[in-house]
Image 1 (cartoon, rainbow, N blue to C red):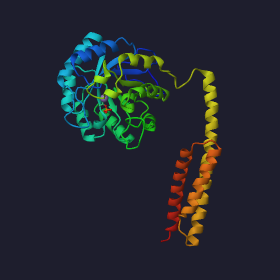
Image 2 (image 1 turned 90 degrees about the vertical axis):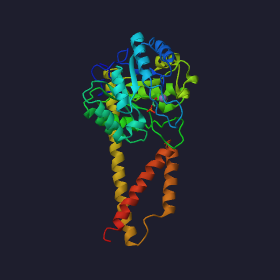
Image 3 (image 1 turned 60 degrees about the vertical axis):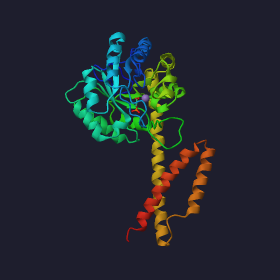
Image 4 (image 1 turned 45 degrees about the vertical axis):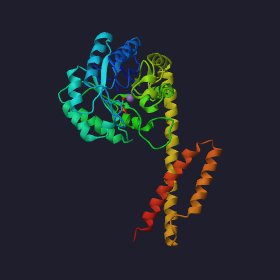
Length: 367
Ligand code: PEP
Ligand code: MN
């Protein structure tokens, strides 16, 4: 059994890493482009013992029309041939009933639901219905929007169709914010998924998070450090010439190097000594949190007194100058304490919103 986090274990019969305790590695091109591209990439990947599953999209969800939209059913035959020759398992994306039917007809081993599909409950339900009574591993990518409930909902729909071999794929989230990545990782969302569904292994997709080759190593390491259970990485024999996602695909050689340099740590550390230190630090953390919560409680009590005062003196809740001064002062203190300025600003923004809410409720209590 292969397990990277305290609770999630790969479902029975799901192929696991070549290494004990290693992450599950899924690799292959963004798209199947030709028989020779599929075969030559797979032959290289098959030499890397960690790689057990070969991914390739045959129907591609492209942002704009008239681009390369995948080779369709023909690609499934190339994948069958690839599996017969190399022994690698096959994984493709499915977005509708037709895709599911064709994948099953061609003995595809793993199916994944893409980010543009998992966002739509109608589409996920259609796929789930087509999978009723079928025993196949299914991976559900996070929806494009950062909504953990939509991701959970998609996993539940597939699970309720009777799929037991269920996994999640973290591929990052669309955002208008400027980030160094194609899709913002928002690690707190896969962490929350893990908290709510600890039994579901999460595979990280640094290719679609990063959107560029140079981020893959660093994002893969981060995923491992956060106890993710595997990696899905796009690989192409000639990445620059790829028909889709060229800038993020890497060669099988680069993949091998990245995997070799990965540091795999265990959630439980190296034994009793580590456990002891961990317990002590956790106790310290618990008591620090206790003090923090008491301080927040005290602050809220003062907020109420201020609210009463303002009400009795017919004052507005907000005195912009005072708020400005509080924020500047706290940020200044934060700098002295070596705290991150943005963190402190964000915390005070939340505390201030709460104060305004409490005081405005007080003000209108008898109205
Ligand atoms: C893909 O895996 O090639 C793909 C289209 O992914 P996503 O659904 O994450 O965009
Ligand atoms: Mn892709």
